[in-house]
Amino acid sequence: MRRFLLIVLMFFGALPVYGQTDALKLKKIHTYSFERGYYNTFLEVNGDIVGLVCPNLNRIYLVNIEKKTIDDVQFSKGRGPGEVSRGPFGIALMKEKLYMGDTDSQRFIVYNFKTDRLKTNKYQGKNVMKSIYGYPDNKIMMTTYSTTGIGYFIYDASKDRILHKYKFDKPLQNNFRVDGVPAISGRYLVHANYNYGDLYVWRLSDSELYKKSTVIEFSETPQTKKAKMGDMVGTIPPQNVEVKLVEIANNPVAEDRIFLLMKGEKDQNYETNYVYDYNFLEGEIVGKYAIDAYSTLIASNSTDLFAYSEERDKLYQYRIEVIKK
Image (cartoon, rainbow, N blue to C red; front, top):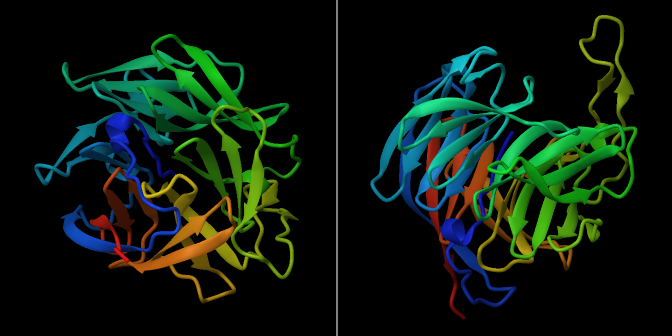
């Protein structure tokens, strides 16, 4: 769920000029509290605004980190104009608008910050839209499905046009193999596979898969299994996962590093009260930073990392500081 990740110069600011192996520390600068008992599913950052999707309350929280305030956008459930049938599955925060991904109806529900109104934009693409995320220059990145496989599309909603496609290396029979979340890091699109302990990496300038990077070496390959009579689905996700990659966010210090949340299923050395700093080009963990609570979502801008704890119903804001040598 989404853990978007809006990476625009407007979102990030200019990238700091640091070495690619600089050590970091996280300094907590603020904590935001939300209504108890209602989980949030997607976390996105656009400059000074952080968005959190709360499907149970039919709202999108909008946190202004400069003013330290929390507002929200309310929506209704349904298939009528301006209504969300289920989800939404991802949001894209833009300068004047907020896009919500309505997967079941294959459309966008758009909130205009100036007019305070919701409207519906039909998605006309041939591929099935799954989740959406923010992308530079007021564009949308979406996960898509089709008969030929799974991929990412960069979509210009204002023109209803696909600008770029990023494809996995081949069509897959096992969709759980690429079930995961993305982040944009400099010139790269990085996809974390939930159940297989690895990352897929594309150069933004190239549609073909650039490389795979193994974060955790599993002792045995995760295996899906056929559902039994009475199960709600035909295939069950892998059950023998040793470490699950929970969430991913860009690391503004260097474009070849990303932040990861990892949860040990069999290997208890990994827990989500730590954020892991991973160099995906070199294939190594270069840092591990403690955070205040077990978290399910992370996102970042040019200076800060945000971690949402479902356990505590809080959003923690950390300043990313380089340790000077």
